[in-house]
Amino acid sequence: MPEQNIKLKLPKWYDLHAHFRQDDFIPPLLKAHKAMGCAGIVAMPNTSPPVAKVLENDPLPYWSIESYLEMIRNAGGSVFNTIIVPLYLSQDTTPKMIEDGAKSGILKAAKYYPPHGTTGAEFSTELKTFIDNGVFSAMEEANITLCIHGEEHNLSSEMYFGRKTNAEEYFYSERLPQVLDSFPNLKIVGEHLTTKVSVNIINQAGKNVAASITPQHLLYTIGDLLQGLKYHLYCLPLLKFEEDREALLHAITSTNNTKFFAGTDSAPHAIKATKCGCAAGCYTGGIAPQLYAQAFELSGINLGSDNGAKIFENFLCTNGANFYNLKTPIETFTLEKTPQTIKSLKIGSKTITPLPLGLDINSDNSTEIPWSILK
Image (cartoon, rainbow, N blue to C red; front, side, top):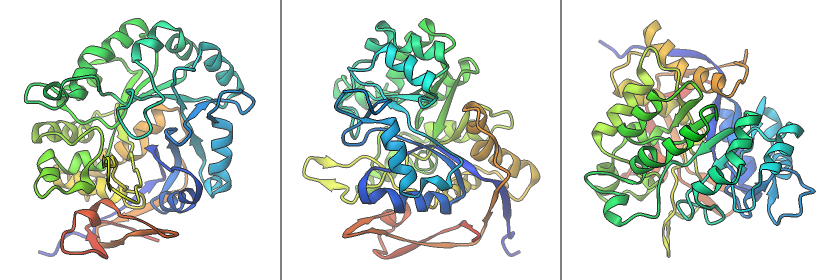
């Protein structure tokens, strides 16, 4: 029998974790997100300099949320219903900054990075700082969402990625409980989850704790990265093992899933293999819903059924919007089970390679994925 022709008409969705960088990168990256049905975005603040103050009149030597929002809107971001720029939590972040930012209406979320743990994380400081100095308390009081890159990076190599534990498992087992015990009502998003341990901890936490999951962590394991050193799959947190991938898939395909939602962590790099190591991040702009649909099918979900389509819509379109108290858009887009050819993205003299193209060893110019978006 020929393969079922599946079309999914979906409300536009929010990518609740993405990187749009700066300068000439911003317009084409925004355009790619619009093309894949996004109604809104959470634009991460690890730019250069970081977005580590809320208001432009603050004398700190960082970009402000005010200025970065304006930069995004002027580059084409005005097409989105919602743009959230989290505050980069730095050694200079104070409770008053949180309070004033919340009162202004500009501050909606703040992002914790493990110091030196990922791209642009050198301005961060230890998690305990924000537990002790009143920043998390002020966020809890003002209902500001804490977005967490949940890894511990001051570890031995065996602890960072070993048979018994890894940086993410350590963070969710040892660090996150300290935050939850001290601030039980703080809204928290565990970003780009990768492990069975973290899925279990998020599930056991209250309704104020949820998590985003990327396409690559649903489709691949560490073996895919290492077999042939496919460096386009290099991202942080690192891909994990099959039991971890299965736990992620089970979490997002559960009929009662309300905690796990789409956040692509789409991160463009013109040069992946650098002199100081591989740049962390996979670029999935323009193709994320298609890759999520591919992951759902690989997990055994029939997206042609009413139940399968509903589970997919909950993950992609509903759960994240509900957690961030965003309106479900009335505008729609349509996914179709027909192959789509994807090519590299040219930005001036630079080239961004989408993840599937980077993994296609037989092609330098284009490759196909099984799902497409109707135009």
